[in-house]
Length: 405
Ligand SMILES: *Cc1c(COP(=O)(O)O)cnc(C)c1O
Image 1 (cartoon, rainbow, N blue to C red):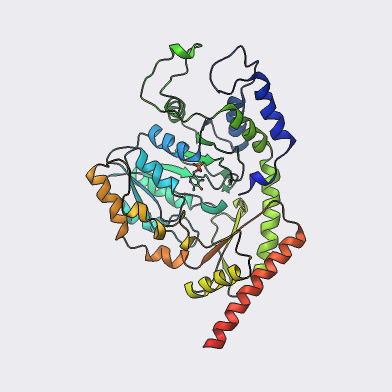
Image 2 (image 1 turned 45 degrees about the horizontal axis):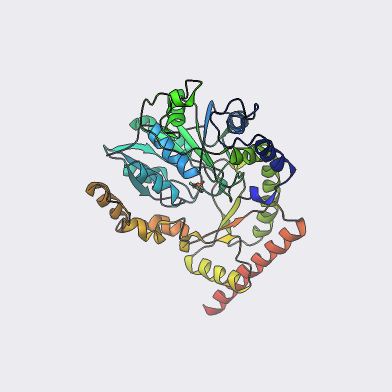
């Protein structure tokens, strides 16, 4: 997810445009800003690049999720179905609007298992929130069908999969709303930032106001704006938007390098018959930020992870099953509902319920998968060396297991 790997003249130029006027805020100061509106320009560029009708920039991907949930009217008493494998931000955002995160199993696509989603639907369910993890997409046809059948909203957390497509459309633009993150490790970055994408004007207008204290942004004088509802401050700055603008312009360049490097690494790992790969719902639409591969058992996978570590080549290869940030097994703070402020007792009980919920189907997947992040900077020789070292480590583990039998 490496936009930070390729920084250059273009990023500097856009930032300097802002520095020259000194107007670091995205709203107001119409005179002194001398026609420099980086956030507005970036929103327009995002709409064009991804084919969304509307884009609202905010200060982070987490803020984008929170804003989208609020704009969709999700709050007290509502349940949001989301996957057990995601980044903590997904459930943080749901909790921040007072709704109930309902975590359910993922399948071998590392995204929401539609059958598990169906089973989790109750009278309180309001929204399905697929997370397009590690550069690839959830099963949107199946999830959209469920939404239609049960009259639910679809909010795509596409924070990790900028540039991935599902059946010819960019992920994040397909549901009622979608979000990208531009944090430092995402496909395109502006240090900290995010965006709400939607084709629904009402959701856009609400996102616009919500992320700026409820301002209606209709007047020419910011001080005279009306406040049709209560909002917060999730604004992006002009400096961040300037960097984002340079990065969006380079997206296709990043994606094509990613796809080439991903293909080369996959070809090497494919030599090992015991290695299988993540199921991708639309192979042509994979953004290829990661190559995710499976071994036959948890035991073998743990042994391979240990071997990669021993050989000092674990960096860039993620074993999410034992990872603090991405999988339910390590989220004790969620399972114990360790919030700083009091939650409504019903919400707290629903959160704590995750401690005793059965995630064995997810465990069976997540305990066997390793995701190798794809660098934009690799040379062909480096990919070959990296791939061959991984293959050697896997073969060594497989041989020692056979010897032990
Ligand atoms: C990065 C990420 C977020 C949150 O983005 P921030 O900009 O870091 O707040 C949300 N969901 C997923 C799946 C992410 O990977």
